[in-house]
Amino acid sequence: MTIADQPFGDLLDGLASKAPTPGGGAVAGMTAATAAATAEMVVAYSVDKKSLVSFRDQNLEAQQRLQAWRHEALHLADADAQAYSTLNRLWKLPKDDADRVANWTAAVDAAIAAPQGVLTLCTALAECLDELATTTNPMLASDLAIAAILTSSAASCATWNVRVNLPLLDDQTRATALDAACSRSTNTIQALVESIEQCCRRDT
Image 1: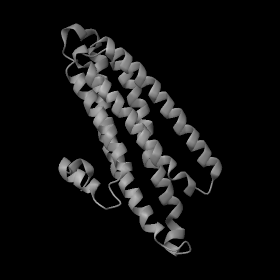
Image 2: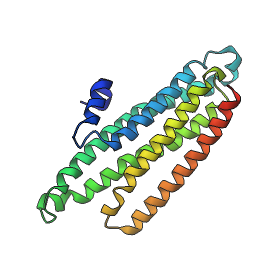
Image 3: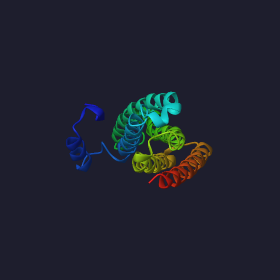
């Protein structure tokens, strides 16, 4: 069963249990999805507001992107859980086991790719939220700020899940480049979130 198909209480029970998945990587995707959904609500209360009619097309386009990102984030949460499940299985095998030797590199790459995808999504999401800060209903400024904070949190979670796997790479040049890319992304997102919060404070 996918994360999107699970009742929220069951999902939390699974997260709280002594099981390898879902774990922190899935939480990153789930948090990003929650951020996108919160922003979708803000836009839903804005697209037909008369005072914002000049932004209607822009907000409708943003609404479509937010919905797509919400679904993508949940897909990435599932991908992360699957990737870690595979990596965890291989980890328990001897290093010279044929199965581990044949599949280890791909498993490590998958375990990095999923949180990388969340981080990329969060960057685009933060940029979108920054635009929405001036085009949406000011009565929902606190909700937009919350969406931004959740985006930042999801990005930080994703960064942790990239970095925890970097020592498993054989190519340390690539590991260093990925680490630097994480820093650039999180710095960009944090700057945008600060801008969004400042704008939202003016509307409350």
